Image (cartoon, rainbow, N blue to C red):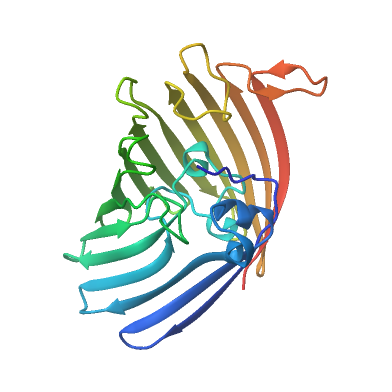
Length: 296
């Protein structure tokens, strides 16, 4: 899985052509943050975030063909579509994108579903393992989504299938207070004689509307790795377990098409995971970033 660095820059350009039933989307990214999101691409293809065509077969069925961003999770690649400028651990360790066929079904006014057959996660240019994964989503009221993905993400002789289940929901509780939630669980098995490994986490996203231009939001996340589910991410103990509590306070101040995002973030891990100003190992990391987003 890739890690989106929240201090890096990104430019995003989206081109679209559509008619009544069909269309095509080309979504290009430039800069280190964008390239981190398409890390399995090479050369000129590393600027392609999404490239897909779609067909509205009926009012209730839509098919999407090509490379599209994942439908799992709360956050997205483009910082213009996220409230926080930095990204959560759950989002950063994915998935990011898929290549394959996705079918959207509108079941009723409140219920909808997705079914997809895709290459291994984030392999958007080719399928080096000759395996496929399936994905699904059941949504209610356009604000609650239960997502899954299942399949072999590597060489069949070396890894067993990965399973991930993810819940995303949000609600405007009052005219000035919004609350979002994301919870995820991923498990896989590397070899027959090894225990399953993976990660899980949960994050709350309360946001307050202070004025028409100023919003203040908090992301409170707990993220845990077990049995070396992710290495070189946070410090792990001798059993391969580790966890982190990440608290992120972000302001969004909008002036026309420009949004300023001052952000304070504190990460506290169970094991030494960072280095302080004296280059000594530490369990804590405090950071500040002034993000700027211009959208038109």
